[in-house]
Length: 112
Image 1 (tube, rainbow, N blue to C red):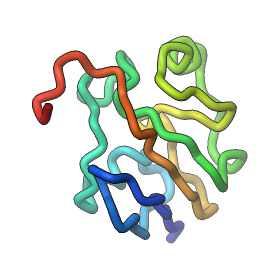
Image 2: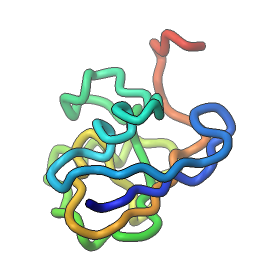
Image 3: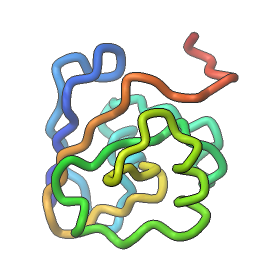
């Protein structure tokens, strides 16, 4: 079973985390199932950028982003070439190292 290493994030997972995820699961669903509260304002429907992550290792093992995800990513804070929306990034057989950006563009966050 592949592992996802989440790098430390001051608010979401200060110590970082290592979780196991089934292949075929999204990064967002795997995180949420393991208590890592990635924002997902659109309920994981690929309609916002609040679940934006940067895949530091294992990026090429995932299926490519579709056009809708790419269009949305253009609006994400801190966009990098290895950026993905975690609600769309499907875990394959390879381990991943994921960074959650420090900021998100969420105007309606219930936790702020």
